[in-house]
Length: 170
Length: 359
Image: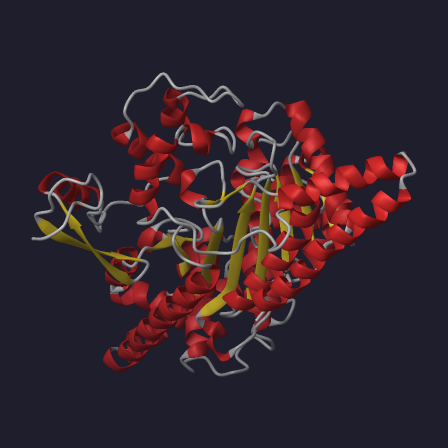
């Protein structure tokens, strides 16, 4: 077996194949990671009643997350809270707990990269909100030239939005 | 209570009969989860801030969105019965009915598009359509999402996509589902096999009212489990394919039932008709199960087209109308279970027999 393990970089010993979202995926893994994947992706027993979603994830998190004293600076959440509730406290938590969350996402979704819709192209949404704040300030300061420039830039974002949503509706 | 009585008098647009598959696929639904950038997720936010956030979302809906003229409801202003009513209509989740303070609902008059505020995520958009039409639902849901995104700004990560309170929803934040009527698969015992293969394909199946073969009315919700690593269109494509396959299995099971043991099947269906047209007390379970048999009998031609029912849409309507909170909202008062069972039986007799017989 050539190549390195896709998960930990150690020497790969076999190819691991799984079906995610109806598509077959295959990747080289070391024995350790392959064993871990094997147990994680096993199909639930047919007779088992599907557990309440939140409980399941709290359980998954409890099994999989290493203990850590990390705390989110925005919302104050700790790994122990994530384990207890199965939920993150804010968007920042995804950065702070990235190391803990990524393997979890891999297990839940079989993927760690977003493939779907993105905020409108051209102007990013955070820029757009910022532009709106600046526009309000410019109008309050009666700086109409600046306001007109800002409105044009916001308008450009709006035009992109219309084009994108058109595609989405097909 | 009067505000919601208007809704009780109407059938939601998503329950009206549509495409030819609609005797098996009743309706489709797409849900999008979104959070507003800069705010902690609802479960980590205090009630004051939740109320402020709700104001902001309602404001954005009013400024520019497909829901500009929709009804806006504050959950804490609603009575227990009204919350139950919205729950039965699938307009709110049980969580939203339980934790009401700072929570809200924006609801289009025809109920095809709605938005929950401060459920597990700040915003949960829901689009519904009759029959198997997840792409129509997706179009409307993403239209609303984009309209709100330009004024609110959503939490988005370049790698992970839309960020949600629970890691199970991150990425597209999308859950697409089909509400399916699968009585023959329940009767032949093939249901479990079909459900297991769907689970292996990363799709979830839940009883709409109860689990597994014990699900009332043989109604099941088929939906995607993964939200990360697939585009919205991929998810829609998979739902179309999987729901289509399940419908084929149901059709085959129906054929098998009628060829193998026609008399037993006819007996079952006519007994259901007997209970619905003559019983004086009917529980929700008994009523839903009997209505399910009736629909099956109609689909298989066991029941003559006109037998007892002028309009088969009315049987669909009954699925909602006979539920506890619906009965009480349309009567305008709260009732104990035995009284509800009596009212349920009377309502069904009138509707199915088409007469006041036995009233």
